[in-house]
Image (cartoon, rainbow, N blue to C red):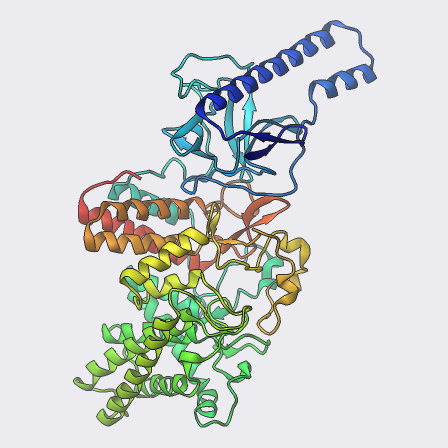
Length: 618
């Protein structure tokens, strides 16, 4: 049995729907709409010809426009994941008519298995192969604040058509999608189409990466002075490495090198912390005594605020890109830089990174995380490869062959330890016995596939499948199930000073705010999934991979901000979250890490099409 809500908010049980039953429902709704509009037209004519008092006018007006379905207080929205078309719902989907200041529900879907989709510009309600066309001669769909409204005009008329699409179908009225990129988005692309989107976004400021005087990048660009509370004007090692890597892929090596060199300069200020932990003088359980991963990017200085600096993934990412750039000849490290990199190998050995509890990508409760272990493995592997090459070439001043060989042997042993840990944990993120630490699905694992390329083959396919199956949403991708950061009504539940503080020691207060299904949906991940499928397509020629690459690129594009919101259009949010039942970007907009990922997704899409000379339908 399927349960849905009727306009009076009373529950009504419907039998499992068949096409005949659906046609009956549609016909009854069509008739009801016609009667409603006829009554309203009659009321309008009567009010013009009769001498009515103000009170009579009010009574007649309210009777003609009953509030038959007030705004629901919960959201169980489902959506076509390939279309930016979302509707608020209580039990199932609803299309709501907006007339003046009021909204009226005039269609409700038969149940949760139904979703809305566009087919060649026509709006359909779909369940498997069964479709009902919802376009209507007297209305057209418009999207406002992620809610679909239908603009009313003349009274509905039944139009001829075949039995599968005659309901409310109109060849001359199409669903009006208001996202500013909609006219450029395609279900199948040519390289020129992707190049045009990239050029359009560059011209509209989507890919602006303002640089600090050090060559580093703040995590986000506050669009107003009252957003400084986020702290995102500071520099995160992890974010900067992803941004720098994207410049490296695009061939802008100088910008990548400048960022890596500045992070390396800051890490030199952390050598005392490294030494104290390596010799056992400092306890790594005190995270402020670990190398800092968040700092003042202008002055390359520590930020005194308490923070979850136990983030092995950030340090692993830095060593990975620094070694790659050095191996490619783009960055020339000094002898002191080489010694610093070797010190970090000793540091990872001292903390036993393969079983070290850290706060990881999301800077939260410490646990043994595959995404952090994999990042260190990626960093150590790149460092070993660079050091091996360096040993057979001219070494920087102060570095000796015995020193290089010793570092390579130590790194090789640590890589083996890390790979063994990954084999035991993956495809999960954490398998510790403590239920509060266990985590089956985490989107951070995607970064082990790309850009780190630590995981491939069947394991990579499993990780992607897990993310798509369990974490994908209509507005983005959840970091993990139960994520309370920017959960529903976050700004109402927490004052600004409490929204972005360190909660790694105790997350219980913030977690208590999470409503079922209320996790934020992040915009970082669809671009990475698109890149992963694109790389597979380029390696195998499998057309299905190009289809998936296109799907996730289009999802990424539709996650950009639209017109008329709190932020300029075509900006990359950190995430979308739900406030008062309406989904929209959180305050960390634009997030430069999201920008970098989207730019890579467009780059790899163009490369796929240039390489194949073909297009494949979505």
